Length: 109
Image (cartoon, rainbow, N blue to C red; front, side, top):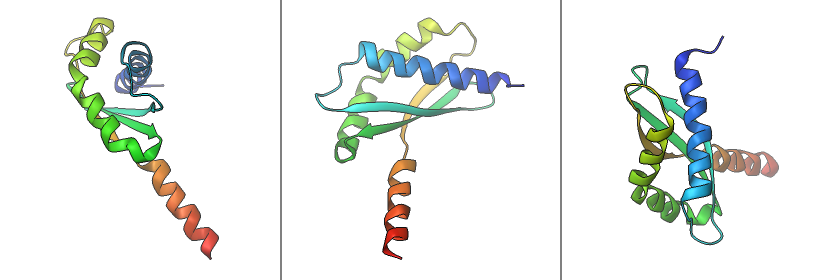
């Protein structure tokens, strides 16, 4: 049975992904994927893990999202019907990059 935190994490993940896709105009050629969300137990803070393609534009795209945090947070708050409203923070998801490194190391063996 999913806990409240798990349900909130999933709702925030899908909602933020939808907001980024529909309301934020990303630089041309950049794709952002919301990988997962970790919300604190008291539901006050949420870390949104994002993956960016192409990977070489990761830093600029993450900075771009952080500059539009107010817009994304406002749109999310309108859709959340709960108290307290979690404050989101964008965090890089390095899972894919690390998996590529491991795969390259295995190929070298």
